[in-house]
Length: 381
Image (cartoon, rainbow, N blue to C red; front, side, top):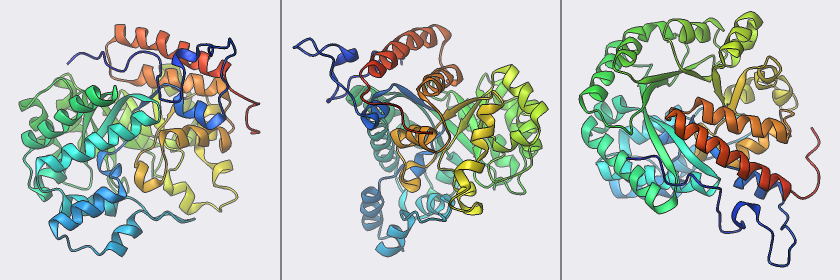
């Protein structure tokens, strides 16, 4: 499958192609939110089961006669001042709702439709095969096939290119991580570009999974890892980089606790896929301090290459537009920073270098054209 669709300038229904002048010779103006929605984006850190629409969850629960009350499902999608984690929701999907491959096709297709509406032209998203196989009872080849079919359909229907990252369940036995890599290798398709690792980091350090990462690298797969997410020590990030040999880091916030190591990561150009809505810092910080104290600010100051993402968009009540808006409104970023984040996303993406170069030219042209149409001034930092 060639990476060709959706690679031109951003073209949304309310946008004139590439910021071209209106018929009367005047360039149409954009409000900030529309600008943030239209700028070309990569999404590199998003969990498939964290993208399920509220109505889809209700529909699937009703169809499966799942032992979940509507009020309980509604609570899954409620995000208060001190939000609860998303993991219990993801586990509920595996346990009660995912029954057949078409379920995975539906949620994948809907996610990619939603992402494309917010200017995402390329997505690499996570999926946990261990839960799907062990709990949902859908064998890896059938599950992978359904997701990949949805990716093809979304590229045709919406013009969004996507790639799949099977992700290790770090709460499971490390032997299951090795088995997951075996599944990938034995059912290899070009749409699966690498592996990741997710779920609760507490007491599950990266070094437990070195065998799976070694096998993935040997098979020619790219690698990333969630590390430093739940306030865990910065050495988890170091282990992911130096022992697991990851190509990029998901979250990685506690890297700021060791500036020397952070500078080494910056010098190597490692991309950190950050999440502005990360619930850990919302839970542990006072409402008036969480943004000011969030490590994302320090990561930028230390010269780390960061890239904003949604993580679990429907559960976190965030869209790609909203994530990029938060970088400006809460973390002191300006339009030049956003342009840099866009480039970081391309440089961190697992795509061929010639395509990366072409997209970089096209996306920066689109960004600059949209910026020229931006009405008013930048928001106050």
